[in-house]
Amino acid sequence: MIRKPLIALVVCMVFFMLSACGNSQAVRGLQKESLYDRVIRTGKIRAGYVIYPPACVKDPNSGKLSGIGIEALELVCKKLGLTVEWTEEVGWGTMVEGLQTGRYDVVASLVWTNANRAKVAGFSKPLYYSPVFAYVKTGNSKFKNNFQLINSPETKITTIDGETGQVIAEADFPRAKRLSMPQMTDLSQLLLNVATGKADVAFAEPFIAYSYLKNNPGSLENVDPAHPVRMFPNCWMFNRGEFEFKSMIDTVLDEVINSGAMDKIVNKNLPEPNLVYRVALPYQIPTYSGKSQSKLAHGEEVTNR
Image 1 (cartoon, helix red, strand yellow):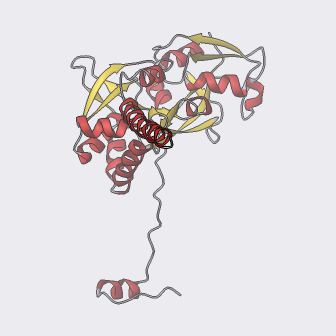
Image 2 (cartoon, helix red, strand yellow):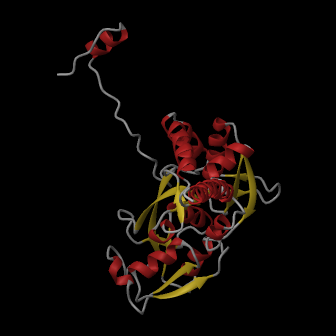
Image 3 (cartoon, rainbow, N blue to C red):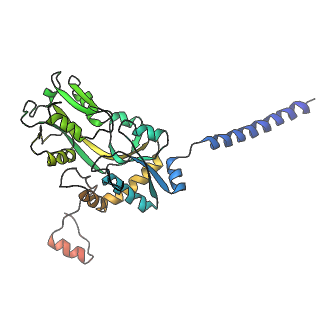
């Protein structure tokens, strides 16, 4: 009489263990492959891009991509033994969607980080920093050295949907009117809107303003050259939670920056110095006196006092 319940109990335990094992295997089968694992398995990174000099430039004749973000990613991939597959050109407002739907792995043309993007995406370490200044039509001294005067219903700010200038306008100058432009609009159009009187203020980084003023000299003024409205890191963007991929990319990016290779890429893509701000090196080179230099050259220990 006792054997039957015991046998039934053993059968139940075995069935439970087999079921648990099967469920565990099923769970493992359903787990999504990480970005790091997929990139290592396939040997390539699929990249989307937004045309945005100096981070990303597209030759109108050959279609070849260049720019700081493009060339730096190609160098990082080369060091990792990977290739880059350029999948598609996207807009500021749709680039996150492309990541989330798996059409590409990274946005290679570099993205400015902000709170809204941090909730839906992950970012590499910065490749460089971009100051953003407020530009007005030449002769307009209304906002000189006082950004808060921009925050008025009498002021019109021109922005592009999904672009960071829109975020700045909404956060810092909510009372100002806006002249919004659709995605994929060239950033120079914002400066043209100001120069022609369609808007009062546009936010732009020095590279964009330089390129515009080169063809339209004397048409715009920087409201306060000593104080940017914002300072943004320029980073590669990918799906949030991809920590192994980020660690791999950041490690090689450190190598590229510390070796001076990043400076060469930046210099190659800038028409004049100081249009972007470089990443500070994470170390300080010690200074030695002449005597200490001599000791160091002969392998002798130098004592700091």
